[in-house]
Amino acid sequence: QGQLVESGGGSVQAGGSLRLSCVASGYTYTPNCMAWFRQAPGKEREGVASFYTGARLTYYADSVKGRFTISQDNTEARVYLEMNSLKPEDTAMYYCAADNVGPGSWSRGEFRYWGQGTQVTVSS
Image (cartoon, rainbow, N blue to C red):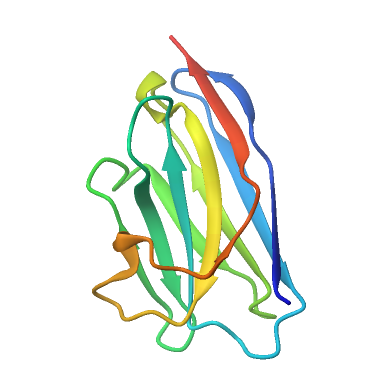
């Protein structure tokens, strides 16, 4: 059974940076997509960024374009989310997800595998 473990969350001031990491293990196949989602209290879950392993394509939510960068290591077992110029509205629990999903559908969040989440708090 596949497992995803996130790390790297924390508390920073506005304008600061954090790097999230997600390690995948126990999979019998390589998911074609690994993605980051976030959910703030009282808000719906939001797709933040995705990485498609084969084509090495990346997608971003408009709210994070130009500030966040998703990347994957060469083993394809770890995905990162580099977050710069953080804003208070980026405060949320961030989740890693993995599965085989089409490029146009990742933001719907229809992933079978999810991590437990890592908290990001940005103060003004």
